[in-house]
Length: 406
Image: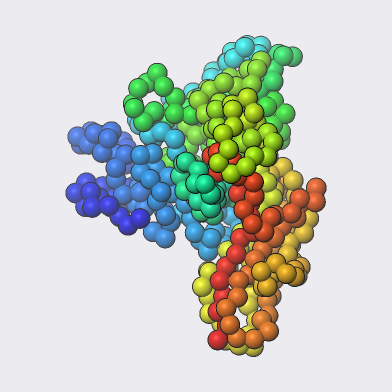
């Protein structure tokens, strides 16, 4: 998607680039710009994204990377995908921001300022892989409804914050607690304040993991507004929808959280495999938890041309939800044979792992390089599209790039 024509009329993109999104909000509101106008300005400038990123829609904003943009070991903001369900929150004041811990299974409801969180709890930093559950949806047939993500709705940024488990322990957790649910400040598309665009959660076992953070920093800086400023829940290895942005409440539940996007087909897949296009009842759908094994070739860009007799160095990343990657392979003959790629250890648990290989080709012609990861439980990526589901989730088919040898 190219920059929209209304950007020139709004005159906001340059200011957004210079000042940063949080300051833009404060600077523009007194000048007579409406909240609606702020939802419609140039996303590349406002969100500080590279112009090679691909915008899928603008209400709400959703944007993905291309494979070659994700070559960094730690994903910078300019290449991070955006997945929103509602409109960006407005008039955020960091100094007065609060986080409430409530719910049926909290011992004592408590409210913390950002200063409380930063001052009273130990800080931790982790590289954490976040992937949209619908990444790869565009390949499903019959087509699945939703954003038609290709391969770029994944990232591994460095997040800093406090452990959720430490804050929950401070408030107290009753013995009957089974789940947490989050509530955020983004607005429903209807702008009806009584409706939440999304309110998801995770079981207590995930909430209490060491790497589950209440994050206030991304890549060493304040989290950009579009990624959850000033406070975000980060649950690495699970669908990124569990990592609630603009976080103001965590509810400790005595049942599976029943917030928006927790029922029906949202972030759920058939508990048993079904035929393509088959109708699946709600009771036969299971909530997505740990994401499947997957990999991505990030160098070179698909379509590269090399001279006959030359070798080609490739690299990329692999990940598998809660698990580690055990083996990385590549093929240049459409999966007929596979060769090993060098695989590095993860920086920390729930971070993606980097791989590389030196590829040689037997003669001139067109080739495809396929990548296949295997995790520590022996799960391998399928070479073709995995089982169909109504919302097109969990496509972890082998990534491939085109190469021409001349």
